[in-house]
Image (tube, rainbow, N blue to C red; front, side, top):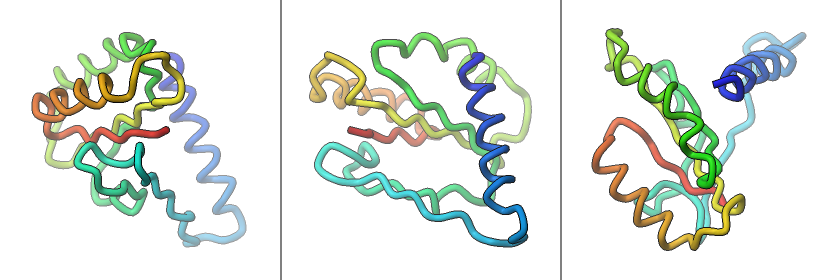
Length: 123
């Protein structure tokens, strides 16, 4: 959970630093795509998709996926309006010894189980 809080704080700082002096300047678009990258469906993922809601972004090492379990559970148990909330799980395929095919198969199942989460592969 400390890693998530640090990510959020760093993201806020990075966004603030980027916009300093240039109020209203759009952040550069980030795209994750390619043979072993992008959404589980095979489509590219773009930061342009992050709009009109509050998003939580998880960047996950498959070997340490349980470290986010408490945060995931807290979000699932929360009683806020989930039509204005979404989460993104970017899976770092390069950080594990597990074969990509096994991880992708697992992610396909998770995508069906948690359709409001966008799962993204990042090689």
